[in-house]
Length: 147
Image 1 (spheres, one colour):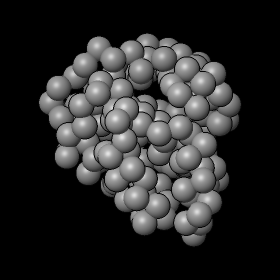
Image 2 (spheres, rainbow, N blue to C red):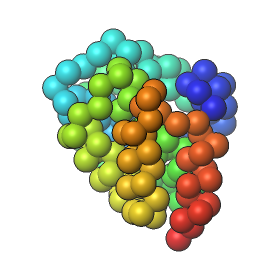
Image 3 (cartoon, rainbow, N blue to C red):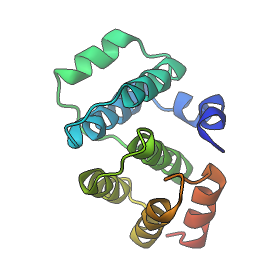
Image 4 (cartoon, rainbow, N blue to C red):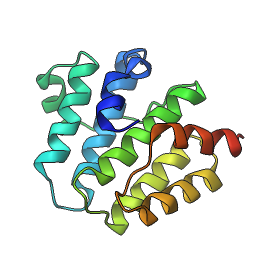
């Protein structure tokens, strides 16, 4: 599932509660700024996600001025989709910095995902030509390394 397919299937994100949605966007904004190079592609990606989750631009603007606690969903399938979202944002501009990779590894840990799967998945992305992998492969990874 490439990015278009990903955006077409955001039902998991629509099922997040309001606090979980804000938490996700807050952390996506943090990832966007972690390498100190904000691209229009990253900003567009975040706005498209917020639009699909029925959040308005004011919600995002307010997040820039607040510190939001991390509120991951309880369901593992939702946490995997969120992790995939971070991986997509990390590679959306075509530049993968070590600090972005570290941020995504930390997010995987904070989401309670299997750390071996997180590590191997990121390695696979770093070694791929397009610097991303289909969503189906992400799901297979986590099934293989199910906690």
